[in-house]
Image (tube, rainbow, N blue to C red; front, top):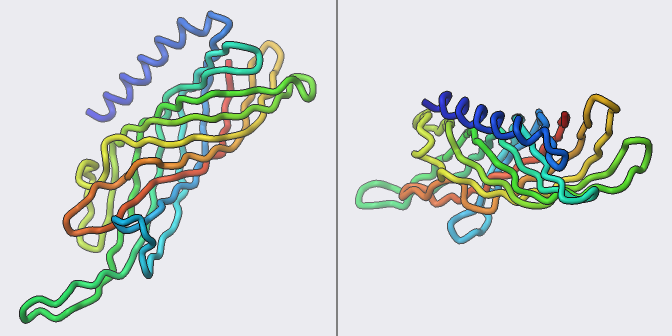
Length: 226
């Protein structure tokens, strides 16, 4: 079912963009981006967690991008991306004593790999030519994500049911910079870097867990506009 959803979204976007590409203000492109993802981890009061040990993960994103140009220097940037990201962390957790059960400390661990479908909604600004066909560009805006699949490992279990651990929707702040290079009669190469900062809580609140995570990632953006 999830694969069918991916295919449907892909062909809907292809159908829309194939009509749009004939119009000069609209540019259609493809991109593939290596990413480094990680999580900001706090307790429920947004304070640091003692003894926290966390690490980042390599991932990727890729898909379609669309620029709606409303001037030579500015455009509305959107598209649809499949993003593979994740994070891992562990921390000591003390269980208070109760009745005849003594207090004990154990290590709680989360290792997450998540796939999301994300839609950037950003303003793109361009400079004039700094060389023949070469321009600087910047991005500023947001990105909406749908969490569609995951594999989450703890010290107790491994689960692939995304709804057990994660919110269905993610919201990111997006900022980036890079260059565009026009190749005559071919298209435009796009290279840059971007930062995607999670604005909303990514994991679900569980009765047995007092950890709050925000998911972030850095992206090396590699694209081509037709």
